[in-house]
Amino acid sequence: MREALKEAKKAYSTYEVPVGAIVVHRGEIISRGYNKRESMKDPLAHAEIIAIKRASELLGGWRLIDCTMYVTLEPCAMCAGAIINSRIDRVVIGTRDPKRGCCGSVIDLLNHPKFNHRPKVDFGILEEECSSILSTFFKELRNSNP
Ligand SMILES: [Zn+2]
Image 1 (cartoon, rainbow, N blue to C red):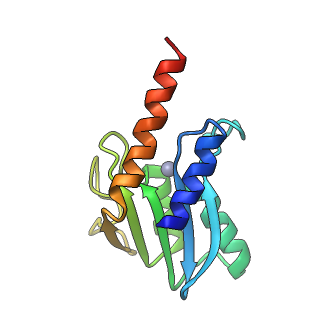
Image 2: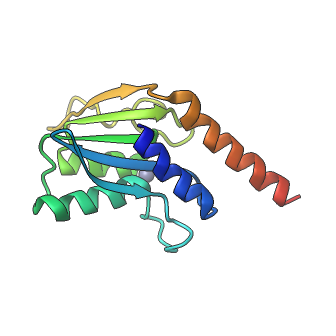
Image 3: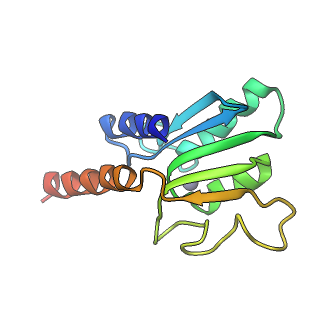
């Protein structure tokens, strides 16, 4: 999760909402991503999507078997869908997103009984750091736009 936080800090330094994700395959970090929605002008450019695309390129297939994603913020509906579609085994989440989180906060897509793939989900790893980088970012944003 420390590595995912490093990615979130990259987003922060480019004025993006600070969310970071990494994909670990058999103990090795194979891809990284951070939110680039503003810089890429792309509503799909979430940290998780970027990390999943890179991991698939590296592994040479769409199935991310034996992969764990570490992500600083609870994935949204789109990213939870991408996690299911890429067959990631396990997702480790820093902090919850009560407004958009689709791993239990708004809805629980990753543990839906009707989906054929249900990754293992763990919450609250480095929660304080993952949460505070977001609250600091939004506080600064509010202060710069009076
Ligand atoms: Zn997302």
